[in-house]
Length: 185
Image (cartoon, rainbow, N blue to C red):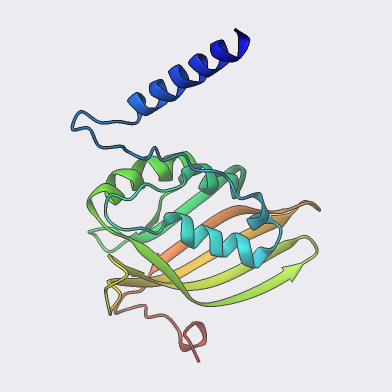
């Protein structure tokens, strides 16, 4: 009797899960449940590669924001800079959550792939500073980037892992092109 009960219970659970994953049209939808890869923070190289990977994707593609937030130390900042309409330079300070709120809306309408061109790193003790030049594409099919710039990434190693402390970036412009030293050789 117990075996019959467990078989019936297993079938009921299976049907319930199948019903939850089935849309009104009767097709099965794969739920997007992102996991955190905790190994990416063990090296400075991998945490930066993970940063670029997690924000990149085709138009409407979901990003792994759990992984994104896992890269940052509490109270970290993302700091884009640029010119105002009056030609004054400005910066905007965002938390990782602020970035997620603003970027998610944009990523729904736009594909975005940020690829590292070149990285120069300096270390002192448990801190590192990476100047990482980048180029951006709307799709992996694009031949030419629509934007380039430099990320100034400050990192900290607490003895167990690397953390991103801040990312301060600027886009390339006609008045301020990326210096040759930060482009591929």
